[in-house]
Image 1 (spheres, rainbow, N blue to C red):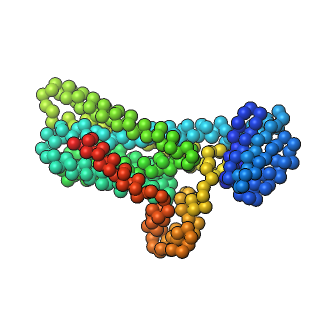
Image 2 (image 1 turned 45 degrees about the horizontal axis):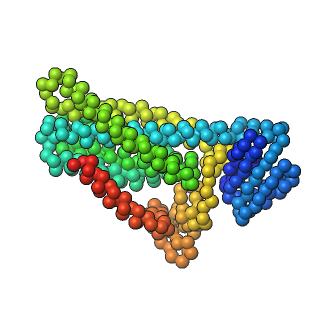
Length: 371
């Protein structure tokens, strides 16, 4: 157990009531020490495959009890499962609540245009302001998550999103430029949580499970969008019914209030879960086992201050603003954030092609959603 905790690449899982399976990409020194100790125990079997050590340990009842107590007593299998469930639910419900503040504008658009005499190009201007700032927020959110921490970034962005949505509904003298500015601030705040939630999920479930995890997590946006449309429509109908159907002016305001209230409460919940299950845990520790994948030499992670950022080449010096290719033959100097982006684009296969295809998918999607 002590060796497992010291080695960054090892995890330990109880594969059966009487068997503890240890797998992982261990360093050569750690693998040698672990192999030596396992062979010293007549119940242990260790297979060395390069830098990978697979250990199947059939223990006596007393030894098994000791192992289980040590694992479960210090963030073992049961705590790891609970941590994953809680963090996934926090990310899922958090992003669902964000969508409750995104959808009301599409529902209220017709009534807002009629009440404030805004033309179709004016409505398009508000939509464009939102999406342009959203793209900036998605880029900035990832950097903020690395710089100031996950919890602070989520609280800051989700809180601003809820507040701007509430202000959009209650602004006393609405005009097209003012509404566009408020909705642009909303888009900037809504873009930040997306990369931060992905960071939490990646750290929690590991790269090998991210496809399935991201697929399950993305259902929050679909359900949140459906709920956002339904709640906004119901609130507008209720407001119109309360007035006896005599007036339809400013009914659009009712569509934005419920989502902002729900998001504000959800922000407090997400912050608490992140504080309990993410901020206080060391994700490189085997005492909290998580699926790990052996990374190639050019895809390591470097720890800077209190966060872990991806660095695609061991020859890079992000802090000093220098980035080199894998062979070290070509280097560039500049701002640390800029050279990191250059390095990611240079070393990630098909990144530009995937980005271009996703751009076209979004082009079709929003032409359908916002006409």
